[in-house]
Image (cartoon, rainbow, N blue to C red; front, side, top):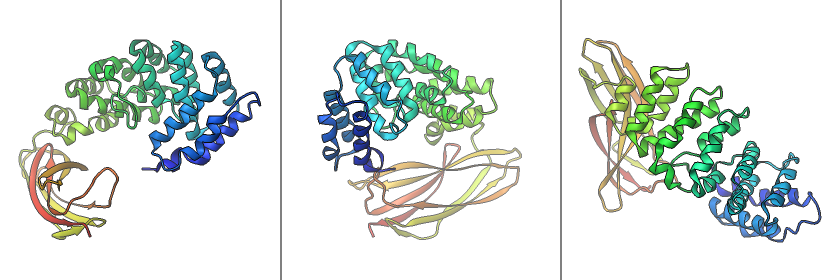
Amino acid sequence: MPTAEEMLSTASVVALGACLEALGSELELTATKAAPSQVVGLTFSERGRVVRDALLADLPTQYAQMEKIVRAALDDPAFTGWMTWPVTEAVAVRAVEAGEFEAGLALLADLTPRLTGEFALRTFLAADLDRTLAVVVKWTEHPDEHVRRLASEGTRTRLPWAKRVPGLIEYPELTRPILEALRSDESEYVRRSVANHLNDLSRVDPALAVSIAGDWLASPAPTTERLVRHALRTLIKAADPKALALLGFQPPTGLVVDGPQLAVQAVAVGESLAFEFHAHNRSTAELRLAIDYVVHHVKANGSLAPKVFKLTTRTLAPGEKATIAKRHSFKPISTRRYYPGEHALELQINGHPYGRSTFTLSLG
């Protein structure tokens, strides 16, 4: 994951000020010019808020006047990338305050090809969900793939880094028309967003997500199966039987598993744990297998917390045997804290547990 400085860097904030200053000397950019020194050491979200508030302090309070300035900035090719993110946020705040939803959303659509307007869209959605969705659904027919993606990405229930919109969580079916319009989009960029959106829905309403995926598979496009597999990944890891069955992963009757065998019994943070297992289809029917593995991490209180990781899919013919190997990294990451002690590794195939081997993790 990139750092805050790699995204909304101090240099990009300085460049934003230069882009705005080039529009005319009548602009007083006191707060915007001070922002670069104020963002040092802050997180990504904190940086965005600082620059957004600086823009709101410097730019006209009347929405129409602010829009005129932002549209003039769009004529400058240098006005692009992460510097535009706090601009979209400022536009959203000012437009909602003024009740200029349609004008503000139109400007957001024009800004989004420079980076994305997905975060700013949440301000509109939180203020008036129905009014915003009425505009967003029309974006599904927009000629620019960035705007079509914005329709899907900006309305996700669990959009990373973004504020939650309670209405999207309470009424997840509201975004279905957007997904239906975009599920067979010509752009992989857009379809990927649709899959992630449906995956978000699966966390809120699993039955709805499986129902939508089932309808799509009943009348598929060439890209549908791949999209659905990605969209249902969380439910597959959670061993949801309906999601597994929808993708053809039936209870693995006749499957015999030996393992997992671990390469070592102790590993340190920063190292990798290699393991393998043997699978044998002793049935008379072909077996389609969704193979995951579960690492049971030690928590601070000494209890274990399972985390499911995707491994592979495999089809075994009657009587076929297979040996599958994997290395699991214990490289430090910002989203997980490791604790020393006895961990465990377990296989999960078509939602069913197989084998369990323990190992010791040390802090190195």
